[in-house]
Image 1 (cartoon, helix red, strand yellow):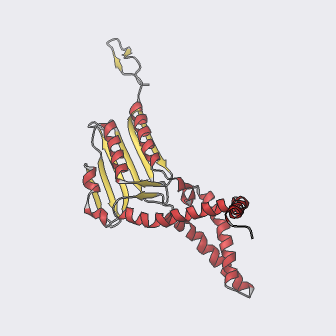
Image 2 (cartoon, rainbow, N blue to C red):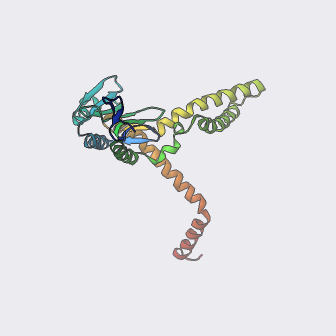
Image 3 (tube, helix red, strand yellow):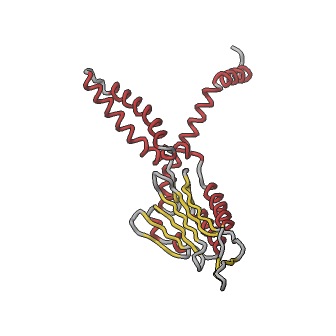
Length: 263
């Protein structure tokens, strides 16, 4: 609450009625695994423009160390550089003329939180824009995010990686056929350490936290996503076959008895 006070001739203070200060700042980071296409980025741009009444400035950082910036998102997304370079980061920035309202949205390829945003302005404006952004961002969040080890706190990452690394170290020690104890211990620690550091890298490659499916980035993503998709299909089918093995065997036997003539 705030009150404007002024001094009168007799030294007493008078003032206006209390006025509610309706100012809010929202700053959030978002975890998950996201895939953003050209249409998704354009939709985010339109939402920010709709709420602020001004076209956002869009900046795109590429893997070839170049940066594209414009108030016209179509110009940026149609730039020829996108056909040969992967998008590393996209930033939206907009404000009204008096800087009373402003919004910044950051999206990047990273092992930490891939999305963050900051909204400043009146309470209703901030909450409304945040709701719209969260809705669009959530639509791009993929189901396999739980498979990316970077989506968990550090101690959970260690709890996941430690037993896998220990098992890998033991398997490696057995596979090298070491006959003496020092050799077995060395092989064990080498296998364990290599696996421990490989897990985060493999996790991020197979289930990336941020993919910009535009130009070169789309091509590279499809090369990885295709085999992974069929791998998961195979795992699901194998699991179902194992669970319903007896039922399937009985069904096959019954069909064979009906179709094939008796001996």
